[in-house]
Length: 366
Length: 257
Image (cartoon, rainbow over all chains, first blue to last red; front, side, top):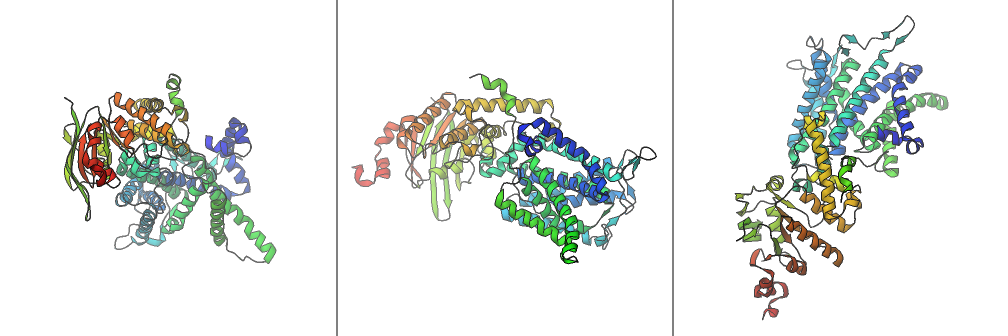
C-alpha cells in the first residue's frame, strides 16, 4: 500500500497521505469506470487481479527467496482443477468454497513441496529448466488423464464449474437492489478478488518482516553465508516453494469459479512466463512493484489491442496482425525497453525486512 | 588449568591426490584468542572449512564442549556454538546492516509460521527483542549509525565489522575469523584488534586465522603454525617466533641457521 502510494507520479513524494487515498479510491472505483466501457473491461480487471495474486505468490519464490521458477502456473492449475473436481458435475461433488479453496491451496502447497524437494541443490539456470519441466509435466498430466480412467476429461477440460457462493449468495448473478439499479456480477467478482489480493498482501507483509522473510532474503543474497549463520536452507527453500504455491492454488480456485471452465491450455508455459514477466517488470521483491507490474501487463496489451484493430483497419483497410500475436510482441517489447531503461523494474525501491521503529526505545541509550 | 573448548583430533582432508591437511591435532581453551598462521597454501582455510562444516574431513574428528561435532552441516555446527566470518566478506547485500544482524538471530529465535501469520504475542515480542538486540550488537561493533544503510553500501571496514556482528548474533561460544584484517589499513587493523580483545573479554573464545603475523603475535594467547597441511608448532607467540621450523617455513631454510 505504501509502496503503491509512493509510486503515484508527482503526488507520491509530495503528499503521501493524498497519494494513499488516491490509490485506495482508484482500487474501489476502477470497476465502476470500467463497466461504463463495457463488461469486457470489467472482466479484464478481474483477470488483472488474479494475475496480481499469481505475481504476488511467484514473487515470494523468485523475489524473496531468489529461486527462479518457470513452472509456477502448475500451482494455478492444481488450484483450478481442485475446484473443478470438488465443485462441478464432473464427479457430482458440489462442496462449498470455504472447503474447496483451502483444499486447493493445500494441494498446491503439496505440489510445491514435490517440486521443491528434488531441486534443493539447483540454482539459477538449472533450477529454471527443472521447474519449467515440472510445469509442463502438470499440464501434460491434465491433458492425458482421461484414459484409462477419466479424471481430468483431457483436452476438452471440465465445464459447468460451480460459481462462487459466499454463504448461500451466488455472486455470479447480478445483484438486483432496486427495480432499476443492479450490480453487475463481474463487478461483484472484482470486489471479492480485491479482498483476496488485500489478504494476500497482508499475509506476505507479515512473512516478509519476520525471521522467515529474512531467512529467504539471506538465501537469495548469499546461500553459503546463510548456512554459516545457522539457517536451515533446505527447510526455508521448501517453505518458500510451498508458500508461493499456496497463493497460486487460491488464485487457481478463484479462476475456476470465475471462468466456470478449466482446460489444460489455460496453463501453458507462456502463462508461467507472463507471470514471471510481471514480477520482473514491476520490480522483483517489491510488493508495490509486483502489483503495478501485474496490473500494467494485464491491462496494457488489452488497451493496445482495442486500439490496434480499429487503427489497422483504418490504415490498411484490413487486419494485418492478429491481436494475440501483437500481445506477445508488445510484452517482449516492454521487457526489452524495461531492461534497457530500468533494469531493476518499474519500482525498484528497497524492500524492508525489519521494522527499525520497533527499537526506538533501545536506540537512544548508549 | 584452563578448560578445553575445542579439540581437533588427527583431522585430515584430501582433495584427490592433494593432501591439504594431515593429522592436525590442536586444542583451543575456553576464553583465549587462538591464532592459526602459516604461509600461503598451508591449509589454514581448509582447516577452517572442515571445522565449520563446509567440507567433510577424510579422517579425524572435532570435539566441541565435550561432544563430537557433526560433519558437513554448517547450520548444525553454528547451532552447536561455532560462528564464522569469511575471508572475502559475504554479507546479505540487499539488506540493511540492521537486517543482516537480525538475520543472524534466525537460529536463536523460534516463532513458527503460524505464529508469524497470526502475529501472536510470542512472534511480536520476539520481533521487537530481535530488533533491539540487533541494535545493541551494531553499537557493540561500533556501526550503529549505519543501521539502516544497505550492507553493500557500507565501507570495507564497516562491512567487516558487520560480518562479525552478524556472527556474534548467533550467540557463539567460539568465534572463528578468517583473515579479518585482510585489506585493512593500519588504523582499521588497530580498531579491529581492539574489537577482538573486547569480544574475548566478554567471554567468547576467538579462533583467528591471519596472514598479518604482527597482529597475531600481538593479540593471540597461543598460536599454531601450519605448513603443507601439518602442524609444525603450537605454543605462546614468543616461543613460536623462535621456532626454527617456523622461521624456515616463512623465510626459507638459509635463514634458520
